[in-house]
Image (cartoon, rainbow, N blue to C red):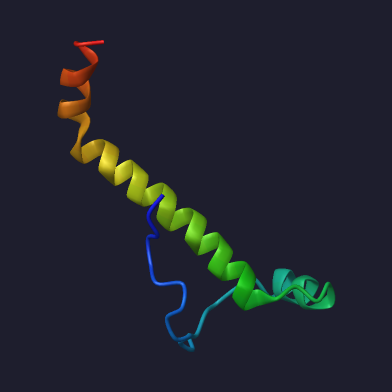
Length: 68
């Protein structure tokens, strides 16, 4: 499967707002916030890209299924 983005691209600082209690618990558990967010975004981007592709190709997929 092709990569959706350059996994070796430079890291960029960002500002986020997050539930304070959740943040405290994550820090208490020593969860790597950057890594966790990257993993979650990777999964979400993949799902959205897939959904977009299916929407864009819905007609062609329907036409191909008539041959099966």
